[in-house]
Image 1 (cartoon, rainbow, N blue to C red):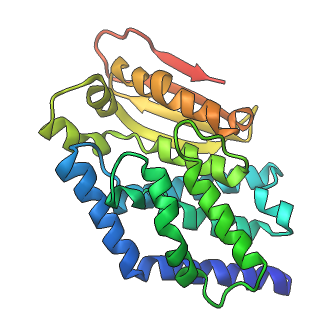
Image 2 (image 1 turned 180 degrees about the vertical axis):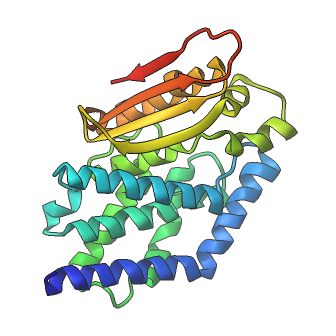
Image 3 (image 1 turned 90 degrees about the vertical axis):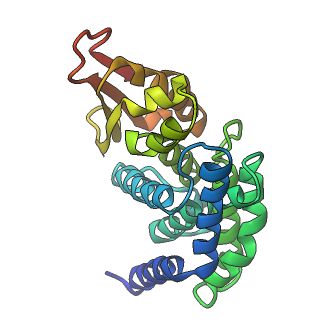
Length: 255
């Protein structure tokens, strides 16, 4: 391992530690859930959701890296480790705008993020890379907006990872406190989301469902987000229904 790689890995480790210890982030994650769950009665947008997005985004980035898909940060002379920093920070910050309002929360997240990024990146990068990392993170945060086009691999990863947090645990609260809808009922059907190395494409996403209602999550929600992520050429999606007494469909695929 060369000195540059060791240095960048150290930066990633420090960024992760700073994210974990940031009182501002903890406050914003908690406030985001007050807006989402207590006031709007929708699903989790707080620390649990953030950790799930971090894990999924990290896995997606690693699989694409193994397939030699270049991250956007290389346009600025950055490395894979720098891309890891961007993805981790964007995962941490993508939903903090919910602390203000659900409407336009992606833009609100972009407005809230810069002073936090200044703290999280302090002393780790010199200019101009520090500004580059900041803007790449903000691009990824903004681009998880439904109608926004990601222009980097890192931004596409955040869009996909955010959409993949669809397992039934996330739907229990809105289902319990609100009126049953196709959104909450279909989300309860999603048992497990698995991300692994693909055969024909670098990434394979497999979704296990307890009944066919879960198809709505994939065909009406996730399919559109994947299509707008810029990563469709790299990802296959399949689903199977297990345990349903009368199966309307047994298997489903995107890509």
